[in-house]
Length: 122
Image (cartoon, rainbow, N blue to C red; front, side):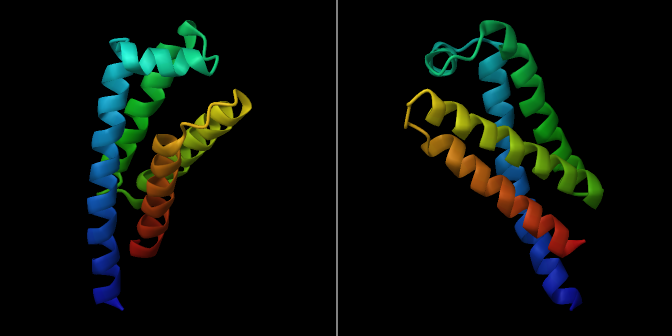
C-alpha cells in the first residue's frame, strides 16, 4: 500500500507542479494585463477591476499546490480552489456564448486530477 501512495504522490507532484507553472504564468499575464489575456476576459464580460483579484487567486492556487507537496491539506485545499475558479471560468464563457473554453476545461480537469491524487497520496 505504501508503494501505491508513493506513486500517487509522484503523480500529484508532476500534475501539481505543471498546474502551478500554468497558474503562475496566467497570474503574471493577468497582472501585467497581457493583451491576449485581457481581451479574452473582456470578451466574456469580466470587469477590468477584477483582473488583480483574479491574478491573486491564480497565484495563491499555484503557491498552495506547491506547498501541498509538503502539507497535504494545503495541496487539497488549493486544488479545490483551483477547480472552483476554473468551473467559474467555464460557466462565464458559456454564459457569454463564447465556446473557446478548451483552456479552462483542461485546467479544471488538471486541478481535479491534482485533488484526487493529493487525497489518495496522503
